[in-house]
Image (cartoon, rainbow, N blue to C red; front, top):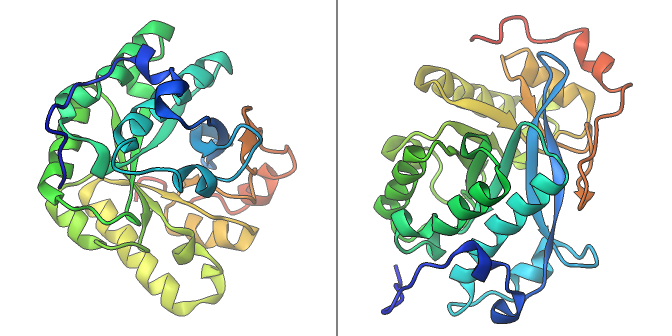
Length: 267
């Protein structure tokens, strides 16, 4: 993968300077829920434009010159907003694996920002999307090893709809995988998706990896996965992302999943 010849790690103050980055952005937050006790497990920080433009409008401005600084800046922005909003539970942040040059120094800004606002590092989860082609798998493995040294939780996002699939799990095991919505959509009506997803769940149980089911839009999708031991969910059925705010789950939603709550969440 490409490297900067004169790589210099940045601190959190530099990451807050949008003039150097040339891209102005903010965050929306979507809850990740735990149906085992009707609670919010945490929130995923999602990049948005300052007028709530979608992530694509921001990511389209990235290039080889600004990718690293942007990757560092989104981490600091997410931590700053999470603290301002009094976020409880996990803060999930997406990172760009092809923008991380030297993991032991690239987390400097993250650690500085967390320490500055007193946000515990053991409540920060880093997600790498399976949808982005990873140029160097060994480098990605080293990134996650370094993150674990600092008590960060690690996750593979969009699992089942990207480039590497099970090869990623063969090389290294994250704490969490997030099932892509392409795998969970209408799973209650799709025999093939059920077979594939249930196989993934069996692997994760064997490897002691937690599973978050993304893209849940209807009750039946949630219940089908809950019957197989999944307790963590994310999707419009529970709440849409909130622009610079922390959405709550409507009270009427919890009873809809309580009646057939997971029989044995330890499976």
